[in-house]
Image (cartoon, rainbow, N blue to C red):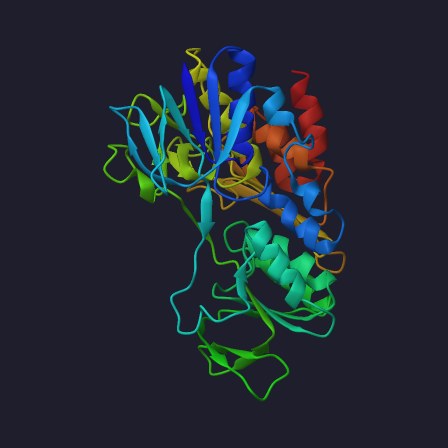
Length: 415
């Protein structure tokens, strides 16, 4: 059996290891599109912080890890797939035969379509190559503009702030973290960042990047209100898009990503997908979505590999879950944090201490939550939502005081 995995992020690596454990004799080829060993993108901010070296981003530390497992690791980028022939074509013309193919090609940063966005000194923060360039330009006293204050932007923010530059954040939505925080949470996050000497501009769009001969930096980021922000470095964090273009003509069904069933199998029987490229089952809605976080990618890779081995493993669906450290302030959101029609909610706000907890209910169940400034409830909130625990009389108590969620978890777990 020949298993080919294209994409060497967490989903691809876990899949390769699972395949080897399940079939010691299979031929396994893992294809990575970057020159470095397989690494975690989520570790890049720690690299920029100076907490780790580049080797610290690698998913597996041993230099011979893949060789020792009999996994052939090669560099290349997919160009096309011929499922009926069982062949993956790489850029440059090489053909890789497969019996079963796992697509784990991940996603790439979206680049705004504005004039001047291709000027030097404008980068995503997505690859180790990006990190090297950002490190060169983000020095003490430099002017840095971060475009985007969503999940990825807020991860990057702390690393940029730690490098001693003058940081301005531009977000087109009306608040920070618009996809994981309500207005109260977004406003709290903004106040926290501004108290850390980070300028935050919400409801503003970048309309162009111009040369700037007058300012200390060589660029000016033009906004839709006429303001221009001088910059040595511009970092883009405005979202990502799944890498699916090479599948054109393959017959694989694609929406926002590769649509897969609960076995991570695509519409083509011998092709599977995992990670940021996969549009898989969603726990909260019962539909499908691309859920681009590393824990989901790892789960996808393991489930896909088990099914590629001929076993039957079902994926129960991704719970929308984000836990984030933004310049020292922890925020989290779970499930249907915005609530549902006809549902009830409770909230507790402490603006002075930067603490916020909001719970959302549907009938007798907790279906969503968000929090700021606390970590003690993270596992409990996830557990109550994922297990669909019947709250009984504890729902009334939580409506009165959401901070009693730990008590509710302990009490209902013993029922």
